[in-house]
Image 1 (cartoon, rainbow, N blue to C red):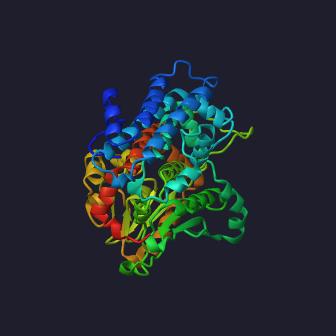
Image 2 (cartoon, one colour; image 1 turned 120 degrees about the vertical axis):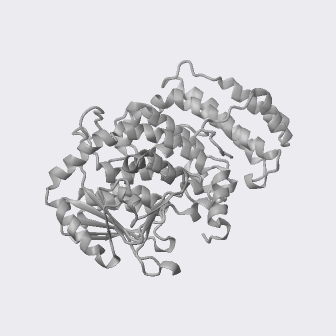
Image 3 (cartoon, rainbow, N blue to C red; image 1 turned 90 degrees about the horizontal axis):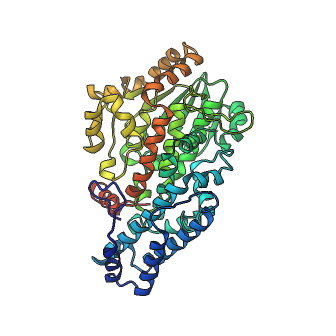
Amino acid sequence: MDRGGDRGMIDAIPPQERNRRLLVAGLDESGVSDFLRALDSIGTEYAHADAGSLPKDADRLGKVCRQGRELLARLPPKSKRNAKEKPAGHALVHLLADAVWRFFRAYRAPVYDMLTAGRTRALRVEELAWAGADLLPGILPTRTQLEYESASLQMDKDGLEIHQGLFFGQLLSDRNIGLHLCTAMLLPTAEALSRLAQFERTGTLDLGAVRLEASGDAGYLTFHHPRYLNAEDDDTLSPQEIACDLILLHPRLRMGVLRGAPVTHPKYQGRRIFSAGINLTRIYQGKQSYLFYLTRDMGLLNKMFRGLAAVNRAGTLEIRADEPEQTLEKPWLAVVDGFAIGGGCQTLLVMDYVIAESGAYFNLPARKEGIIPGCANLRLPRFMGERMAREAIMFDKTFRVDDADARTLVNEVHSSSRLDKAVDACISNALDSGMVSAGGNRKAIRIQTEPLDTFRRYMATYAYEQAFCHLSEQLVHNLERHWNARERRP
């Protein structure tokens, strides 16, 4: 589905145009008529949206979504559609998206309350996605459906995951629901809690994509994805978040240190690399999930920025939006070897201190990829000003750490031989003030930079827009044009 230009809304298709687009593509006339009749029967507003009316309205919309998907399945794969079939596919996807968006606008509170037992359960984004698919069959995709769709290249997907973006966009648009969800994502993962005793006892953990070590008062999170230049994807995200949780939970650690491991790429053989951003190979091959974007920014990165939340004595989340944040947090230091591209650069925006290797660089090539660069649009302007942030995000500016412009994100620059000593000195200096002071100062800074409600509002827009970007034809075109995607090995 093409989302070129500045089309930031679900496309409005005039009623007289819908029928023509679908029929000229060769779709069965009776099937088209049945679908459009059922779609129109839903109406444009839900007059009495509550828990009592939810089952009936969800069932009606679910049937419409299945009818629309059946018509889409009769078209060739998206990349093979001709000039008449492409507008038909586009129309079907957008007609369904519009209906689903209006449904979630009306029913976001009853749906969320049913899934969370009246907000007594704290569910993560991915848990909500799968529980929502069980509650709302046909409206939200199931895990099985998305696994089946992942066998297709990104260019041939018609956007099952768009409905997830519409779902979370509406949940996050509601202040009370959104704050509950954002706080739920700040809870430590079950995997981290189960490994905490082992980490305290041994001081090391090998999580595959992450090597974790406790040394003195600092916890070292070393990202290890050497084949892909330490790029991030669905397989690496969970180990990263577990490691983050463990550093924050460990009672004797007072600071986290983030660094990339040496890589095996011939061009950088044996060198440490901080991060190559998101794994573009997986995106192009259709293997990278939409949920990655939400869980990374609401989980891993927001925990580094904000710390861990806790449940109250009753075992539930207690959201007091206008009171000081009650989080367990520690300062973070990033060590940039080589480069911090895309998601790597986004990570620097939640760090308390950044030390870089001389000659390193960072950038946000999301424009060339066709996606939104995480929370960089929210955070980068306050570091370097809006004018330069726009240049970085929309015009692909690269920052060399030895240049003055880069000092807005980088605190120190050293030769590779002096990096380890610089890290030790930074840790010693930071921890002299004590953990109480460090945590308190972080909370105080966030009051004027990014309160949780500001983050919640940003993520509502991000959830909506990134879903369309992730499934756009422009994304595939950009990867082929700027990244030679067709020749990359999976």
